[in-house]
Length: 338
Image (cartoon, rainbow, N blue to C red; front, side, top):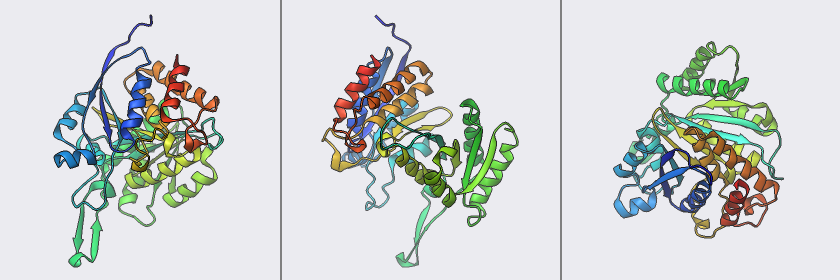
């Protein structure tokens, strides 16, 4: 019998739509590993709002704070409810989960382009997602404030350089729009230039966000680490995911000094909820990222290799051109782990 490793408290936030389904299959995969997980379930999202009037209860925040790591599924954020704000955005700000880290790797699937191996590091707490908005001129003008601070910029840029050094990347691309947003993007770029002097072994290039969007399509294999502000990073990372298979395989970590939340990048996709057809790869790989975070590197590697092996066996869900169900795909992953 395989020895059980250290025990970990994992907060589980299924959320809305397909979130609970992909998280359920992810937990099924995690239970196949020789690790003692203590799963603790919390409430989050639109369904929670309808039940309690609060999409992010205080109890959920405390659960995340007191866990070794958190697995999050997805939430629905309806645009037509005044004062309703995305609970995952609120969670990031409340716990200062300042680094959103989104790996993008080629996969053994026909839909995936080859030789892509990049990580997009996105500032996660400010920019246009600061939530500072107002309506003026009797409702004829709406204003959102873009907030870029030295403190947050230094933290995310330094995180990106340290990540590049740890993973033996030789280049960082700093993405901005300083030619137009001279104060906000300009501050971000200036700070990056200052920090780059401390990492002489890593080449720093800077690139306008529109040029980066184009180059991601034209020459994606040339990127290694991209670091950028919140909204630019949100858009670019979704674009990058389409190079390797789409949002069904895109995953991320929201990482702070004390806490971390790992999630598939896709939304709640309510039209697919309950159909047992969506791709659980993103959620399972988010769990792989979580294992790396808590120090279970060997077991993280087992999950990643099992995902790759499953795809090499031509077992795909509908979005990658196959006919496997959500459950069938996760079962194949578990077989390949064992």
